[in-house]
Image (tube, rainbow, N blue to C red; front, side):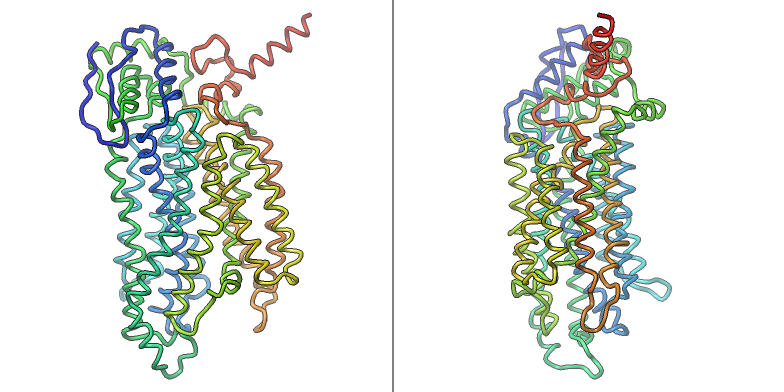
Length: 575
């Protein structure tokens, strides 16, 4: 058989089909996937991580930038409210992306299982690019509100960001070598840390670029201006308007660079085998990826059609359908794992996104809180966040990268939730006795254990443990649950901190909010017990843990480990 391979680029790879002579499609599937599982770690793995990590860089960049965006929109458009957005406006802008993300995670996750990973990968990045560019060019009109327009585009951007979660996770998982699959997926997710740092550095550069305008305006106080933000009008307001547009717009640069590679990746061989059931195409794509080049394999068309017809009948893999989906997860053994991954992510994100409530206190502790002028406030906010990111978040992400394949996912998640429970209890119950420097230490430790623990593992495990035909949908459901947790934190729990507020104490309930977060972390310990350990096990081996209802996932004579356990019990009873 002659396999034609043409085109491609340097993120995925190309070589001829070694298994064309094997007639049994189940055996060819096993051999082809084994080639991916045992492949030595190479530069093509690094390039795949960089391409997949772009979406997470953009996501995290946006999370950092949205707070600055709200501040700058208030300065430019809300001089009638002391240069600050109204609280409902501020909350709506911040929640709009999370709301869109939930839609994108579930929607793109399901579509990637229905039409394929390749057909969806890149579309979410195009949506992010278009929505981000539209935001940066948005302006108010006589019949429109700038806040409303920003919310609209941020919902669309959130849908794109949400789609990136299941797609980048499962594509990395299905192409990764078994030995270092966890490290590759963790490295993709660790781009969030660099996204936070990138946003801070861009803001620092913009602040330095408009320094003279920001300082000169502050030197001439305006009548009736009671705050630095309200004093920023004229040239200062124009400068701030340019700054927020540039800050948001620059976020599309890494996305635009990665777009070509995403649009030209091959379909993952596991999807092609298990869902599309195209053996010839799957083998060609497998070998193209492993050869060191990017793009799709092109098998002989006549041979491919013949093999596809034979594979439909011979491949012993259950077909996906909505009926099968609900039947599959209706079994307690299967449903509890999905519940475990989804609830662990939800519980985590409640505290993860709520942690930002303490950022201002921590910045005060390191001398980067507030400022007398707009310039000082922008500079301190950007520089302070860059310091905090480098102190806790980035080290946590990379400790996870280096330990996830040796320590394991489940131990890291259990230990992480345990330490986070303790840290939030200390912060909540000893809040009024802690010095600002003690709060700084706790904040950095919490960031460390978030990322060297459940924040990373809740992303990785759903991309590994589910069967191919529902892997993307299940990851999307898990990730969507996490974003619902972030909405709960920002929309329901965060407002509690101002309960009973006075002029002298604006956040009297902040200590109780930390206590609430400790309860969520404690609950995460128990949901972690529901998930499997996936360290250095092939995806096919993991799939055999499920109750397949008597069907074979790999063509092996044994249906599943669950079925084995049941048959052993029956034999013992018979004896």
